[in-house]
Length: 153
Image (cartoon, helix red, strand yellow):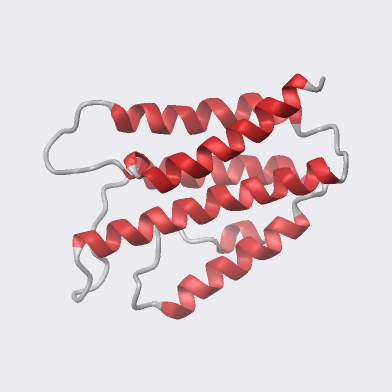
C-alpha cells in the first residue's frame, strides 16, 4: 500500500523527484484515510515515522548537502506528515465521523512526547527537530482540533 512507499528519512533537497513523490503519496493518503478502516493505520504509521525521524541523528545524505539542509528537509518531512494527519482529522470532522475522538489518546500523547523530549537538555551539537516552531505549530493545530472535539462529546 501507499504507506510502505513513504521514506524512512527525508529526501535531500537535490532529490526533487523523491520529495515530490512522498508529497503526492501524502496527498493521496489524506483523501483515502478519511475512511474509518484506514484512519487507524494512518495514525499508527505517521506516529511511527515521526518517532523514527525524531530519534534518528540527522546526517547529510549527499556530498553536496550540509547538516542544515538535511535538518530542514527532515523538519519539512515531519511537518508534511503531521499536516497530513491534521488534514485527515479536519476532513473526518467535516464529514461528521464520530471515530476521531477515540484516537486522541494515540495522537496527542505521542506528539507531546516528541515535543517534551526535544525540550530536554541537549547532548552535543544535536538540536532535536521538534524544537522547530513550525512543528510545534502544526502539533498545536492538531491538539486544538482534537481537544475542541473532546469538548463536544
